[in-house]
Each structure stands twice: as C-alpha cells, then as structure tokens.
Image 1 (cartoon, rainbow, N blue to C red):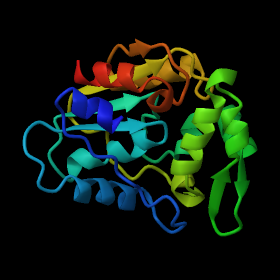
Image 2: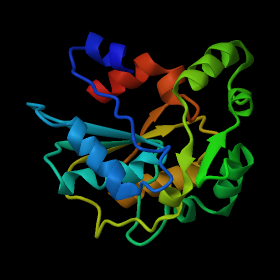
Image 3: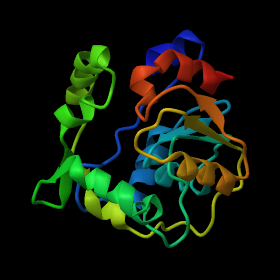
Image 4: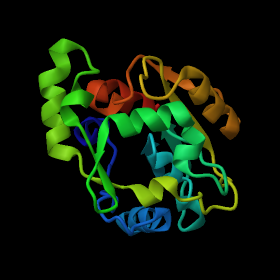
Length: 205
C-alpha cells in the first residue's frame, strides 16, 4: 500500500503492532500507533484492516485524528471482545486456519490462507504472507474492548464485496454501527494485497 499511496502524493506509515507479544493488549496496540504518528503534520487518516478496527478506534482519544477508515474491519463495542463480535462461525474459522503456538499466541496456516485466493494469485500471495505475517497474541483478541464509546470523528467503512472472512450481513452491521453507508470495492478480505492500487485510490478519494 505504501508505494501506491506515495505515488498519489501521500505520506504513509505501516505500523507494526506488538502482536507477537502474548501479554500485549489493545491499549498497547493503540499506544504503538500513537508513537508511530509522532511529529506528523497536516491531516491524519488512520486506517485499520480486520481486527485492526479495535485498535484504530482507541487512537483518537490519545492523539489528533481527522478520519478513521475501517477496511472490512471490526467495529468494536465497549466491553465486547473482537472474537465475540465476530460471532461463533468466524471465531471457529479463525481457529481452523491457525495453530496454537503454546505461548499465548496463534500462528496462521499460510498455505491454507493462500488457498482462498484465485489460483493465479496464490504464489505471490503466499510470498507476501511469508514476508509479513507474525504470530498473534490471543489475549488481545479475547480482551473486552476497553474504550468507553466510539470516538467522535468522521468515519469511512470499506466493504469488500468478495470477503470470505466476514459475512456480508456482519460487514453492513459494522458500517451501520458507524452511521455510514459503506464504500464498496470488489475484493476478498486481503484487499491490501490483491487490490492495492484500487484501495489506495479509494482511500485518497
């Protein structure tokens, strides 16, 4: 995403959340984002994908944000965990494509994840996953969301029409929780990998 956004004249930062630390909680994730934003001038848009929606929703209470963008992301509810909001079917799907590392983290089965994209894209997507995916501390996924309410900032919800992780009804419910009509893009869940240029253009727009 970064080269695409930079080509459109924007400064972009990909934040490495402390996912591999089984003790890290959502407050730690949000603090990592805020620290990465230090010194940024001008309008700031914070984008979260999938479970990242729980993190970005905590950021505006900690620093200035002009807009939050949820890319096929979970919109949190106070006191409810990400896996609870996802529902039993999605939780079981996540568990089925990941393994327990025995240290409080889970790691995704990358070969299995790559199998859900079109055959002609699998090799490139698997290489991408191998280069970027890390273990995920599970406690943060089961942590009741610590925010008191959704922040009072403008929102955008990007709905991926071919998402094979979050059911369509769930994604529309997420957008409705924000009070916005979703912006649609023809992509599966990993839109940043499969449709980076289209997503960049949508974000800039």
